[in-house]
Length: 329
Image (tube, rainbow, N blue to C red; front, side, top):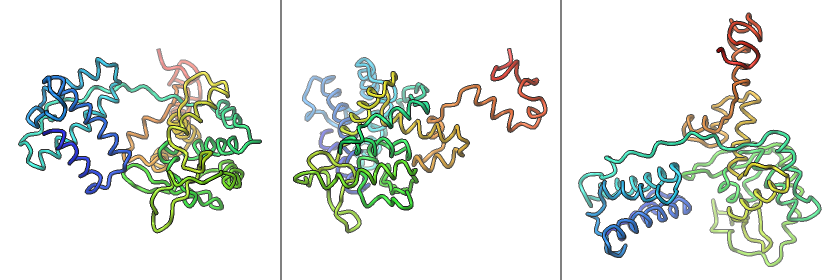
């Protein structure tokens, strides 16, 4: 039955591909919904769906059902990717001959730019936590490190104390696929972490939850702790960020991912090379990094005037435009 194949596939990802637990959970959720849809279509239980019912019509129907439920195109594309990976696994295991997802096209993606903060908003956000309390000092360190390094939410939550070198201001990060990279951070973030560190001794009854198994022969010691001494979860960090966004009087909804976009945007606006930003963010492809950039027409025109020899001769109001920052009519 198809549900048994899903369990075997998840075990294959966990033990043969060494995929992270978070990624395995995401695959499990997507495929569980897919099997549930096939069961509802056939009027049976999910445990009764045979592998033969996994066909192109079923995949298209599943995507249509997700769209009808209001799922975004990006989420639909992610679920299709999970179903496709599962289908390739079944072909490799000779559960069926042809990949049924090869005939299904992915939803066209919307190229909406993620929200990001301007410099004044960043200043207000970083000043929002109360530095007189242990929780406020911890939260200030979280916000400073987010903006200074551009880490993903899951990466920041997974940090251990041993991952930081405060004297060199370098943090070792485990990104997607278990790939490690070194990311620098600034003095403000280093000072916020130093200020927070003594408070870690004040947590009562340190919990083993979140400390996890030993890594590289060392017991894990989470960088950011909750009140019980356990690792602060991604969900809790997300709530912390959104709380201070409200307290800072920032109108747009800003998430930890938006702070990552802010990091990349401000680096690019200051003249950083896109390839360097790619390495800092841990992107496998440059086109992924390009989606994090947010340049307005005025900025593009400024770069054009500085870089193009003829534009330099023409001056800011030369033949290239009808005025500063205005495209030709």
